[in-house]
Length: 238
Image: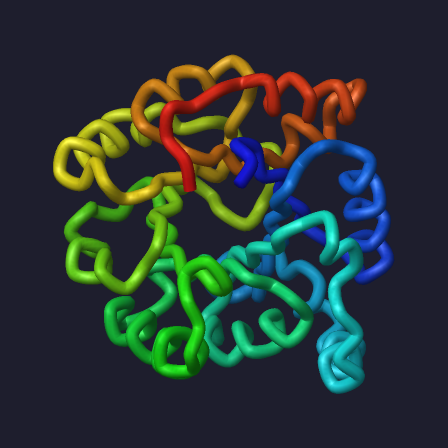
């Protein structure tokens, strides 16, 4: 799997398709689709802005484009994360990131999702992976009992999730150090505020994947920006 994971926050189905078409010109192997329901995080993104269109897409089993190019992961910034998962799996996603704060009991949410979609249905981590995201203000204790249910932890590097272009919150650095000292074997990725300026430090702290949004889509030359991120190296893998 690649080190850099471009994050796409679609305003519409057309916007999603256009951004994926652009990324198909690059060397990236994974793409994250940010899904924001307008309740857990805001503002709402597609498909919550066009639910009927999305439902029809799922019913017709119209798969996500470029499945031969990308592994899709979906960052579920929503309160209905488990039922939403089924739709995205139908469309071809293979990595699902749940947010610890979106459920009263994240351990129960993950266990239920794994029974419904994962090991209980004959899947393996190589075919379907579950991750858990943790907000910058949340304590590590919130995810401690969930680690056996996930393949990776995603630390959010911004204070307000669901919006691209937010400033990087340096508090994440100490949180990463602490988590790595306790759990050196668990894959870690960082999403939010990642730039070329801070990416190298993140990698030295044991981050195996960096999820990058605005530093690519708002770059003067987005393709060159992807190449510079791809040139970075990490001793860790996903």
